[in-house]
Image 1 (cartoon, rainbow, N blue to C red):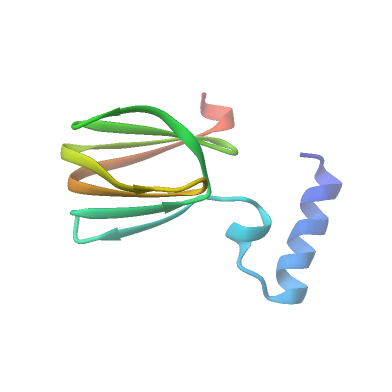
Image 2: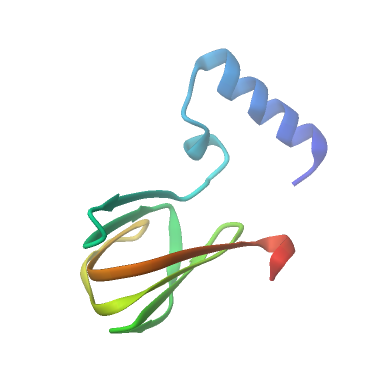
Length: 96
């Protein structure tokens, strides 16, 4: 993404008071008590097992570690994970 486009998006967020996750296509995570994780703005499941989940994002990947993980719901841009969640790692494009 060019520097000019980033500046325009930032101005749009500030001027219109919009949530930055919508404008910048960032993931939004909601963790409920270490037992349920709601993730918005994903691009697909790369790997899933009862111990780990890896999601593709628009700008990197998201890794969830735990035990007894299950995908409760999956939609085109949203996923709900349940189980014992031990850790969440975000890896941006520059870290891959």
